[in-house]
Image 1 (spheres, rainbow, N blue to C red):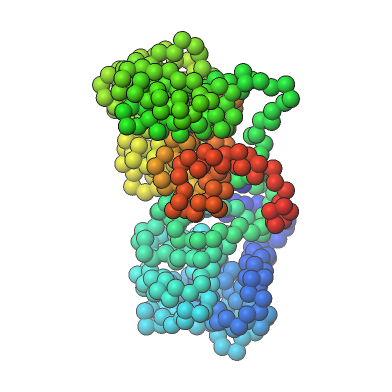
Image 2 (cartoon, one colour):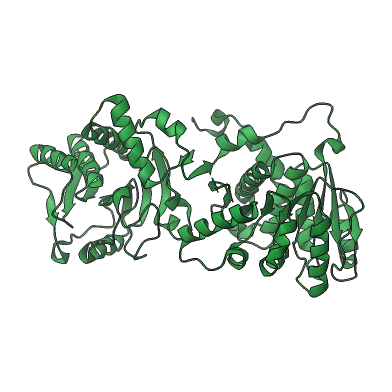
Length: 510
């Protein structure tokens, strides 16, 4: 599913009105009807008092239509107009008049702090104040209104986007944003829902089809792609009957130092579990017995006693994952530099490999094209420098990816893969993955996919999805708190099986 910017959504509206020969007022009615349907299906006429807060633009117009439909179906509602300006959109005014025609009391006007209403914990709030059209800082009393509404902690539904959020940048005041239990957004998701700074403002995202022009949606590239099962299934490479271990490549996991052999164990086991035909671990001699006993399926190559002082392979692997637990001491840095100059295999770079690169950017000239980097936030910061907000972070990462022709997987709650100015936003994963070693598992997964012949970008996107899916399946047995990185590896097979479950078998209809 594509992710659109605010400007692209406005263009989609225009394209729809032209292709379907409808007015903006008709399109507003169409969209608001879908919002009402969702609310009505959930409430089923429940006697809850619903407070609808409408701005004076088109998002407010959506709210007025929803208010009217709720009234027509017998719901107990109060509608408020948040008068933050003298300007009103034409469609807002039309729907304001339509609402007044069927209600005995006009919508309640809010113009200052003195007008703020009281809401009970058992009530419901519908937020239709700004939507995606917000493009300037909030008027002071409106910011205070939003903070006021958040204090009631009742169920809150935002139409299109929580008010106070911009679509394409971080909010001016992090407290002056509606905290929505559910956000019902139109047609396509927006990037703001998936970033650490802004994703917290909605707990549950519902994307509803409002009938925007299919040709425009198909032909427009968007600012990103939301990666779910439908997007990764075409990437899967099925195995044929006459395959053998050589068919699926020989990858090598390079890393480890005294006390940090476990990271290589996790990555090696994950590369095997994801389906690599042969996997070797290259690590210091101090890790030999640990690796041989922990992962009997792997071959082991050793170097110096406690740390890597030389990295020499007498064969050409299909793919290499390097950097985990490796350390950054001087002789390891020299070994790393020498290795890069001679390497001709596809690379996945993590942990200390990234840390070394951040201090020696000249090493990038020896990386193969489309090398995959998998930094956590601090490692990313060492690569691209400080950022002012998550949107700035993404722009700097895109520039970095373009400059060095590398694929960057920004690890997080919604891991984002970046390459060729495009974002691939992952939908799998859970808070249990905030545990030591989960990144090492991802390194092994992506390296193992590369080994099997997956293109680097596909390996990064598919691997990130399977990594999160494995954890999602695992927590059904372990809980968030009880999840270990090794559990993620154990459920990789289940994540593959989940890809091919019929929706009916899961109790869902797509």
